[in-house]
Amino acid sequence: MSDPEVQQPTEAIAISAFAEAMLVDPAPAAEREPSVETKNQPPPLKKRKNDDEPLEPLSEVILRRLTRIKEGDTVMLRLPSDAIKVITVEKNGLIQLGKYGAFPSSQLLGLHYDITYEIIGGPSASGSSTPLPFMPEENQQANGKSNKSKKGKSKENGSDVKSNPGWKNVLRPLKRQNVLEAVVDDIQETNEHIHDLPELEKQTLSHEEIAELRSQGMSVEEIIKKQEEAHEMFKLKTEFSKEKWRRRKEKKFSTTVHPLSPSLPNVIHHYSERSPTSILHLRVDTLSQLLNMANIRPGGRYLVVDDTGGLVTAAILERMGSEGKILSFNNSDSPPAWSILQSMNISERELKEVKWLNWMEAQEDYERPPPPQEDDNAKPAKVAQRLRKHNAQVAELNATRDELHMGGWDGLILATSLSPISILSFLTQYLIGSAPIVVYSPHLQVLAELLAWSKKDPHYLHDTLSESWERTYQVLPGRTHPMMNTSATGGWLWSAIRVHPSKYQPESHSRFKRRKTGKQSGKETPSGENDRTDEAEIEGETGVEAGSMEEESISEQP
Image (tube, rainbow, N blue to C red):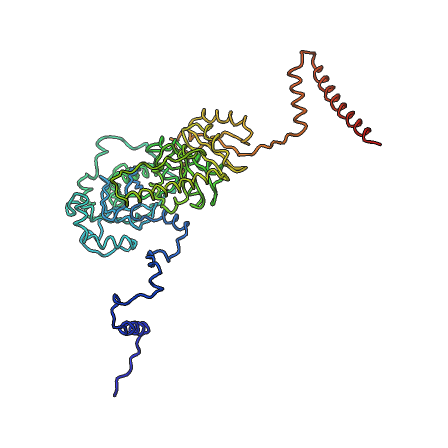
């Protein structure tokens, strides 16, 4: 019996046919002479891997930036003490948080923001590469390669992996805690029978015992529960006092981290606590009013003067969805140092339509100086490279200047310590009609002078000065009340609408002006006499005009 025929796959047939075709020509590929058509054609360009792939929508890029952690991101970690530690996520790094523990930086890759994670000793502590069920795919890959890269990690961090137990820790989402639903009227306990005696406040668990319980893998909730059982006066406390006591113990003993999303409210809160002068004391409610008054929308074109470290520029970008154009101005020859844009992890693609000019380059009569003279001993290749770079910079600068001077911008936003009057006098001419103008300042006197100046200028309509006010409330069942501490002010806003004043003046305006000048130049007479004189003069003028028209009509008759 003959063997049954085996049907080859289509891919195998195609590969074999291609191999046979290659064997037909005995001459090697290097000895073949190229055809005439092939000689004259330029070599094909090398395509990048992502050239054929369509670009991802900007909305998805922004959403992923605000929801997932990736390598190279700047992350704000909120600790149990409410302090914020800013770190940069790397694959081969160790994040040390002092008494709150340590963990590999790769554990954050792929995790979601705004979720509290607990630092525990996981399967990686025993050298196992089995991923945890809650770990994302990026985190699993990093965890699987941890054993291979221990030597590199120890060199980069300057410490031995075995001596630092932080390399063995992993992150686990913390269980959601129940909110106290008690109402004040329903609470039976009181604090009147609690005695604050030193012998009654003895430590139920020592630090050594707590450290031993942690090494055994006991969670913070179980440790706090053991302390509650040993506390003699705990049952006499009210529900609110018990909740406060638990919160204090959690801040003291818990080892958790809470990655904050790089959103505007979180960034403003962080800088307000750390360095409020760097953002000109700008508050989140004032920023929202600024964006609303400026009518920021996708596809808009805006002129921006930003001295808040890029906070206002980032807010405009986020409101536009990175679809539009922003032209910023600064005092230096180098690009503006926008530290907040870096802390918000804004990508280069989102910043593609953000241009900048210094005040000298923005002038219409500005001419860029020629490039410096090259050394005679310099190599021609380097000279040509520098010349190409200079020409590219000049072309980009001229394109930005032409775009500014062509006008048609949709709005002007100022958040600067410079004089707003001089800036408005220069940039208002490039705005379209009905374009909104908003100026922020932490000082009231600066905007009061601006308001007095704008009232006399016909190019500004509906110019107003406003201040927003904010109070933070705690909203919990039976415990809703305003917070005790709040900021005194968030700055002031001046807003107006740019208009083009008309050159046409109605006849009523000219009559009113003549009457007003007559009153000022007339002699002092009893009240009402100047008015009658002005009316007689107006009637006399109209009578003379009518008489001249009648004489012309009579002379024209045959």
